[in-house]
Image (cartoon, rainbow, N blue to C red; front, side):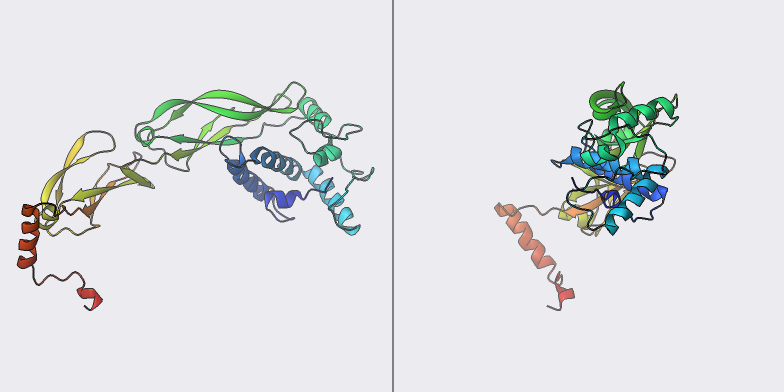
Length: 320
């Protein structure tokens, strides 16, 4: 059994504040939670992250762990065949079952159980401590239409809970989620009381769902604004025209392409983006689409254009 560096697990310094530990844990939990992570060892990583957070967020356990780490470091490398000294926790008060040895449950490492006794510690905490349940994090992917109009969706999550003995376990559950209109990528939807159960009659934690919006074939999102590429013909760009454009919420609007429009020019439709106190806009990026010269009439038209615009040189800025 190797000595575990819980600071390294969370990616924080030894003197990290409680707030820094909490932020590091939340960031890693969002990355490795089995509901969202594609990595094969996500459950093991999540277990290690939970262990590190459990120890470093508790002042007494952290102090005892730091003292043990210093003691091990003085005796040589903390890696290899590590066994905690019998008196390692002398002078520190926290719940630790007598004779804690090998892992009491698959969700705890042997190292963690050898120090704190997973089953006994959790059971004692559940019975004797008053503590609000921890918050949980997960990610959901929604369609752009749901972000625009709002919706109510049922989602399935694989969540960690605790059983009657206080042991952690995984279970599948289905939740109903109200998606508010105008929700943006990266925004969190809070489900009160859907996190870990509390101890000693204290309330459960909350579940925070990070919103991800699925790629759309026509629109892309930047903050509250939407962007769409709008193809126009050379004549529409050169002479100006009125063209029809589909809108994200359905329906069609008519927009004016100004004469001498350039490739990449932006046309703005105010308030047609994501809704909100200040709604976003819809930007149309003009893309000049060239008709193929695949018949005599089309070739003749291109030849006539070349003769009429002999002074036009698109490479002039290159000095040629």
